[in-house]
Image 1 (tube, one colour):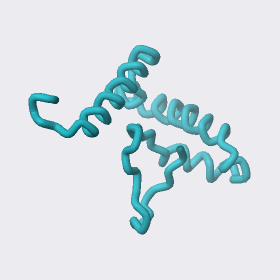
Image 2 (cartoon, helix red, strand yellow):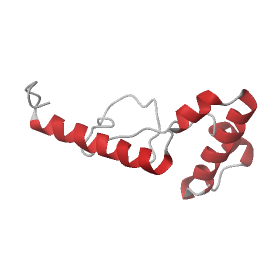
Image 3 (cartoon, helix red, strand yellow):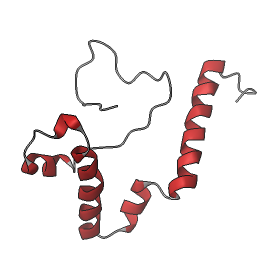
Image 4 (tube, helix red, strand yellow):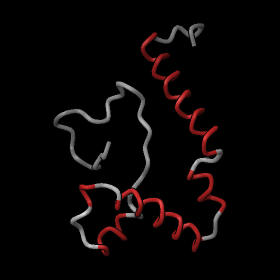
Length: 101
């Protein structure tokens, strides 16, 4: 990246991201999306409900919601990875997502 004259701060962000991805690959071997692509529809649904449902159940913010709403929410949640100092959104941006960090 140095040879392409990329800014130092950008190279650091890429390095942090790649380290994070590498560490998680060592720990989990496969990404969730990779596993989901290999499963049939029934197993995809069950895995999605299990993983995202656990996340919702373990989060204080969602404890007051009804089970039906949380069940629907499990299919909407998307895992996103951001690097240190990456801008997720700016003040005044139109809200299209809810970020739980």
